[in-house]
Amino acid sequence: MALLEVEDLAVRYYTEDGPVRAVDGISYEIRVGETLGLVGESGAGKSAASLALLRLLEGGGEIVGGEIRFRGENVLELSADELRAVRGTEIAMVFQDAGAALDPVYTVGEQIAEGIRAHEAADDDEARDRAIALLERVGIPEPAARYSDYPHEFSGGMQQRAVIAMALAGDPALLICDEPTSGLDVTVQAGILELLADLATESETAIQLVTHDLGVVAELCERVLVQYAGEIVERAPVEELYYDPKHPYTVGLLAATPRLGDDRERLATIPGTAPDLVDPPTGCRFHPRCPYAEDVCARRAPPLVETASGAPDEGDPEAHVAACLEYTGDLEDGLDYEVQVRDVPDGGTEANGNRPERRQSGESK
Ligand SMILES: Nc1ncnc2c1ncn2[C@@H]1O[C@H](COP(=O)(O)OP(=O)(O)OP(=O)(O)O)[C@@H](O)[C@H]1O
Ligand SMILES: [Mg+2]
Image (tube, rainbow, N blue to C red; front, side):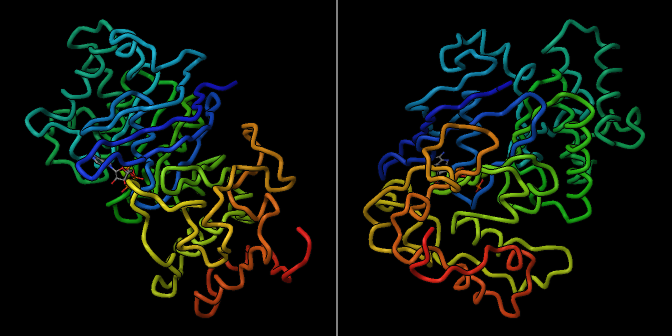
């Protein structure tokens, strides 16, 4: 059953330079208890897409189109009171830059207890007990003692755990985690990922996990959306995305994803930079950076289609879809992933080995 359905969502930031097309017509769903990854480089619009779900856009951000349905109800039509009732208890958000979400002048425990009282009638002792239980649940050692610590007394990883505890205070059905592990060192990251994995399995909490790191997605998610320049360019079950990526952007992201034991210096990066979303490239937005781009790519915007058949995407969560003219049969030479492999000396990453076989030019698709 779909818990969340997003249809043709569009977000703009109004700036002096003009409207920034931060999210440009994305559609997807999240099922009950599912963990979905939303991945892409900085500036892809991942945070904008996530903040929009709870109508939390600030700084000139506006939802300009589309629908967001949660349990069938359009979030965009909820009154302020109805929206408050959804926030925290149905959908909760762990914001990017967790440390900033904690108020330095209150103890961590008080802040969590405050969150609990916002959602239910609990007296001070009950709220305190529940806050301690939440601290324990997110893996804070000696939670009763740490209840009275101020945020600066927590390490970065513990602050992230505390912020997750705050988000869990209302027992949400959907938890949106925006870059929950960035800025943390590798072992601390692993602990946070384990915590989220436990939450996903122990409770029916669905998770939308936002990250620039495909490695993080691999650890945790069942399905993945790849976002580029405000659009979804690929959607697939996680194994398929890893072992058989279909969009050249995803191939580039995989080549740039460090694996355990990899020498980081050998990793490829995707050439070029993310486009200006005030005036994005014509046709396929990735074409200026795409090693396989042909003239047609600058002219025609590729629709999301099922990669196996070329049929239009109908939203089937298990389908593997990509927005590349390769899959509508409009490329002459097709995708030649060997070009990308040469970017990685020694061909050292797993991603290379996982790439589809090189296809000869002119071979049928
Ligand atoms: N307050 C703002 N005002 C103007 N433009 C903004 C604002 N916030 C974001 N943008 C722009 O919207 C686009 C999407 O930004 P967003 O923060 O959603 O990307 P992101 O994928 O979350 O990136 P990151 O990985 O760096 O967090 C970018 O072009 C960004 O510059
Ligand atoms: Mg972001």
